[in-house]
Amino acid sequence: MVDFTNTKREGLTLIIGYCRVSTKEQNPERQRLKFLQLGIPERFIFEDKASGKDFERPRYQAMRDMLRKGDLLYLDSLDRLGRDYDGITREWKYITQEVLADIVCLDNQDLFDSRKFRSMGKIGKLLEDHMLSLLAYVADVERNKNLERQREGIAVAQANGVKFGRPAVEIGEAFIRMYDSWKKGEVTATAAYTALGMSRTTFYKKVKKWEEKLQFQ
Image 1 (cartoon, one colour):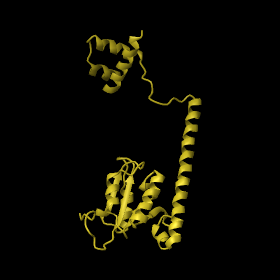
Image 2: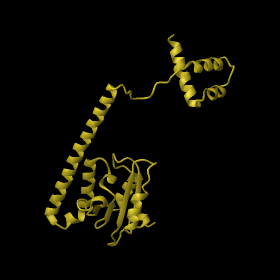
Image 3: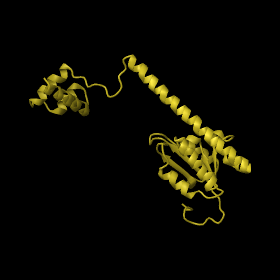
Image 4: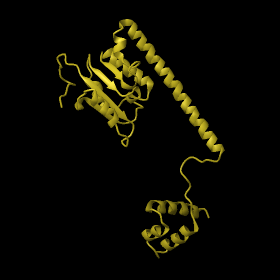
C-alpha cells in the first residue's frame, strides 16, 4: 500500500471512499461495493465499525490525515460521516474549506456535493454555510422529537404495566428442593442445573437470589 500521508504527492489527487457501520455485527459491504463500482481502489477505501457519536475513529482519522487539496471523498450518506451533526458541520467545513478537498454523498448528490458550491465562488460558500446550518438545525429538531417520542412511549408502556430493566429471577419449588439437595452435597451443581433444565449461569443467579432472600427470613 502506498502511504501518501507523509509524502509529497506532486499534484496527484486521490478519490477516497469512507464507510462506517455502528457495530461489528453489521456489514459495510454494500457501501464498499458502491465505492468499488466508482473505480476507487481498495486501498483508498477506509472503513470503521464504530458509533458515529464522535470522530475519534482510527480509520476516519487516517483518511482525514491523507486528504489533500483537490482530493474527492465519497460517502454513502451523510450519517456515515457521523451522528453528531454539529461535528459533521465542523468536519465538512474543515475538509472543504481548510483542506480544500471535496465531499460527495451518494444518496443525495443534488444537495451534498461540495464541488457544486465551490464552482459558485463566494456565493457558493455562503450557500454551503447556510445549508450546513440548516442541516444542524433540522437534525437537532429531529433528535429532540425522537427523544420525546421515546419518553412518551416509555410512559405509555409503564402505565400499561410494562416494566423496564432486568427481569426478576423467579424461584420455584423445584429449584428450592434441588438447591437443598445441592447444599447438602447430595448432588453436584452440574447435576442440579441439568435436572432443572437451566444453564450454569442461570442456576447461580437463582442461587444468589435465593440466598439473599434467606438472609432476611
